[in-house]
Length: 278
Image (cartoon, rainbow, N blue to C red):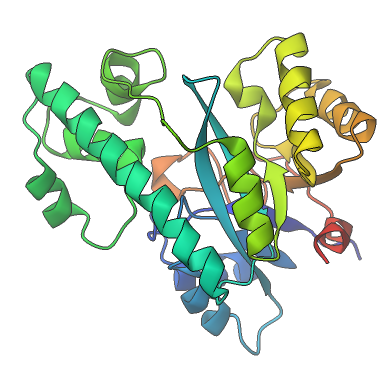
């Protein structure tokens, strides 16, 4: 019987709404063979997930999703899969990524305040004390305090890549992310390539640049891929000698249309892709 996996999942350690233990429980109920916990710029939830999966049928792959800046103004995400989270050098260098995220969040909050919104660093710390914040946390705060009606409105009006309060991720490059992941003995994978809205030429140039920097894989199977998009991503990976991975990008109720393992209902990520991570 064919089994399926999900190599792109978020927990409450970043911007998901399921705890790592709840993710494990949900994955087992759905009959998945494995999940990779890939929270943004942190591995803080991985140990809980590993402990929750002991003596179960589920394999938990230690992972991370690193946010970087490409060509000065475009967010590019690099997944790290099968990382040694106990690696001291990896964790020390990860603090640099986390500090850059904190700096960016402070700048976004300043812009939101200038736009007339009521939000402070102290309020965010009180509301989300144990999470690595993403823009989704800022959007959730604005929605919960009645300043916008939905998460989509928060992104469309204020936080999206082309919205007035957007702040690019400076200093941290995709190449740095790849090196950090390799420092932790993991595999570096370009996450959701089509979400960057690059032209075909621009996307291929990005993949070529990163492949030259020892990128290992490309996330070809993804919740929002449509029609021939997955086929094109597989072809691009093959051209540059990259293996493929797949993930739903599950965030719980923060992305209510996407479920674990199946994305928007028809995602199927075969378990043999785990062989690429060894």
